[in-house]
Image 1 (spheres, one colour):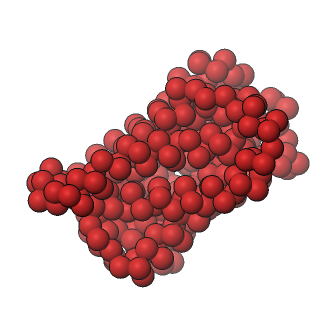
Image 2 (cartoon, rainbow, N blue to C red):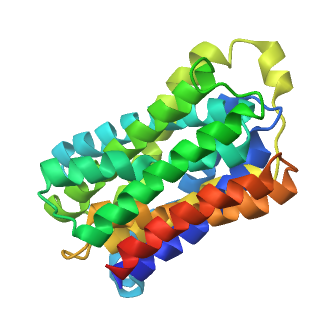
Length: 299
């Protein structure tokens, strides 16, 4: 069941990436990010209110947000800080790079997660899982060659480094998720609610320095329907992902790889919507990544 939940998370992540590309195009990145996280927070806020005023009903429908200690709040704040940094870098990169380049680089996340899962959690992949893992990494390298044909030099373009750093931070957060869910026994909705709350606080501090004081930047911001859509889709994806992690048999290395099947939506559908270049050539490494995910699932 945890693998199917991982595929559901991938579906919502793929739709989330399409909306995110639409939201940041020609727009101010930081307020877009604040808008998406705030939308996700507003989406889960009713469940918090129900949990406070009618906990029995919240428990009955399976969305009880439990009370947690200040120590647990501290652990969640650490996750929020990691992901806030990752999102700031990723959103900036997405503004300047094609989605058909950004998403496959993000798909290298399983590489970092794989290593962390082996070193930290002693997860042991079998032969087919190793084959799938290296297929994913090799396919991402193929994308870098295609990216050069679009005028993107992977060695000198600062946005490439930004998206790689964002990917590393995102993978670190993924490893940390297993600790939060399985060791601290947080349920998905509790983690999602407080995570959004702390990310909003971090972004408000950031925007108070970089955006709020500048009238020109405030006027440049354009609200789009895709901004709240990004937040809601992300919360849906996180919910299914955390539900999968609640299973003690779930392997974070495999869940991370399964989530990368989201690129099918981003590369195929996104390439058509945003009319990006070299779509056919990108199907070759896309097939490699999907084959890698298949080997991991089949194993």
